Every structure is written in C-alpha cells, then in structure tokens.
Length: 457
Image (cartoon, rainbow, N blue to C red; front, side):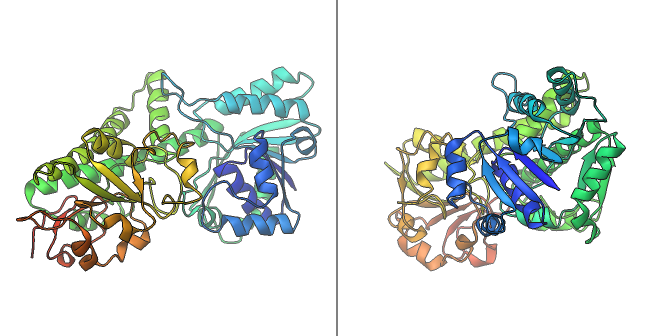
C-alpha cells in the first residue's frame, strides 16, 4: 500500500514516519522547498523526541521519501492524506481551510485509479463533504464511490509524545459511509489491530466533531482545575490534594488536572475557538467552551499580575527576573499560544529585566533564530542565558513557567545563594507549575498555585 502525505509539518511528518515504520511506502509532499531540502538532508524541522531516528530509519529503508511534486505520487497512491495547517482565521476565529481546499484541488487533478482521500488535519464539521464536492467539481469524470472516496481520520498526537501516541493510541477514529473506503482504512490500520487498539468507524461529521469535542473537554478540565486553584488559595486548601481526590474518581480521572498558568500549543487554543465558532454558526452555542476560552486568556494575564505584585512588595527600582521554560509544554519547541507570550511582554512593559533559560531556547541555541518564526516580538528585549544557573545569578526572583524535567532537580540551596534578596525578605521563587513540594522549600518565599504561600517552614 502506498500513501501520499500532503503536508510535512508536525502531523504529516510524524504520521508519515510512523506509517513507514509499519512497512508502508510513504511520500511526504510539501510545497515548502526549504523544508523538503532539509528533510532530504536529514535535518528535522521540528523538535519531537525520537522523530529524528524514526525518519532516518524510514529514509534508509526507502519506505519514506520527501518531495515538492504532488502529481506523480498521488497518481500511484492508494491513500492520500491531507495534513496541512488549519490555523484560526484572522478576524472571526473560524478554522482557515484554504490549505485543505487547495490540497483537494491539487489531488483531484492527479487522481488515477481508486483513491481514498483522508482529512488528517483537524477540520470543522462538513469539511469532508466539501473536499468531496471540490474533487467532483474539478474532475467531473470521477465518480465518488468508484474512483475516489473521502474519509475523516483525525489525529490525536500530543507534542512531546507523538510517536508513542501513534504507535499505541487510545483509539483510532475513521469517518466514512463507504464500505470500499472502510476496507482500505482497515488495511492501513491493521498493524494496530494486533495490539487490540479500538478502531471506531462512524460517519464523517461525527468523526470531524470527535476531535474538537475531545480537545474542548480537555481544555475544560485545565480551566476548571486552574479556577479551583484560585479557590483553594482563598479557602486555605491544597489544589494538589484536591486534584488527587477528584482524579481517584474513575468517572473523572487524574489526567489534565494539573494546575498551570494556562493552556497553549497548536491544538487547544485554535480548536476550542473553532468549536465555539462552529457551534454559534449552527445556532447551537457551546457556552461552556466560550467560558473556557475567556478563562484561559484571563489566566495568563492574572499570572503576569501575580509576578508583578510580588516584585512590587519588595520595592525594587529595576527588578530582574529569571524565567525558566518558555515553550507551552515540555519536550517541544512549540511556542504557539504559550503562557510566556503573555507573561513576558507584560513583565517587560512594567519595567522588569527578563533573563530566560529554556532547554531549547537559550544563549547560542540552534532553536533561538526560530523564535521570530513563532511570532515572538520580545526576543530583542530579553537576555538569554546559557544555563539555568547562569539565569539565576543576580536575579531578584525565579519564575518557573514550563516544567521541563531538568528544572525538577535544581538545588534549592543554589537558588537561595544566587538570587539577589533585599533585607527583610527571603529569596523569591514563583513556581507556576507546582513542581516542588511545600515541604521542600524552607528558607524561600515560595509562591505556587492553589497552595499556601510559604515564607519559611
């Protein structure tokens, strides 16, 4: 079976490499010539643990190739997957489907023999039908159900653990009303049958909505526990224990009940917004999702204000803050909608000097030039340190924004020694991920989320 992957971004590259690992012949096509050139040189354009070796294996076995040309590979493929970007559309927040629709036109021109066209990108309800309509319009000679079918197969890949998510998924969702397409997709996912992965077949609208509903619900859990953290602070409760008590209920579960400065990344912000817009468009508003979007945006602002308030208490003329971690989560270089994009500019606006260390974004890092690509506007207004230790030296406060593993083992005595501390105060550690236990932080003014503020023990 031969697969063409339209789009060699995060979803397309990971999915293509994993299918090649399953033994299929995969061609990843992208119009970005520089990206394809880099991939052919063995340079992976994104950071994802294990992806470099997986791509290398696929290329070495000749089951994974990269190209900017679409026609030849599509004309000989059994399955063509559309894995292009669907960013939030400027002005109204709907998903921008222009790349999907252009891919459909390009695919239509190249089809030669029965082909299943699969929407792998996260797309709103009705997109699959629109893709089929475009193909029929572009190629009136093609008969749907005979020459082609369109199916929905949403991805559920988490950045930082995408390969594991693909190889051992909780489920695979496939939307199609065609028995012929169903048989092709069953062959595609046969390797996962061997590990008894649940494979759900449904119609296209349901499949398309499942991805949005799942991400909306997970975003809801994050926003909920963040608001519970605020309540815990007022009530003298501990959000860590509260989350544990909730999570032990099998109907709720422990996952995504981790307090944070707000969710970000490539999925939750745009998918909740797209779900909200679709719901309003269909005159069935999801007011809960609307509230989640608003709460998450306000959460990031509140975190910036909290840091500034703690600095103000110390009457510092020109405070300097060391920030550890700026990506939206660990094990990714993704900065999209990260809390740092709100918090750091606000600190700068308030006259705070900011020094940053992130395991991927640090002084002389190969990833540092990519900050501008990520849409960051403050990279020339901050200092990047070569290490966490360097960032700490002389700072008036330490703020942890992203819970990278290497931050969990920082010696607290080193924090106390290196931070500048005015007379009458303890060294200030503001932990917006609660990576330390309260019992560990003696000798510090330790500010965490949903727990009592500690000034000593």
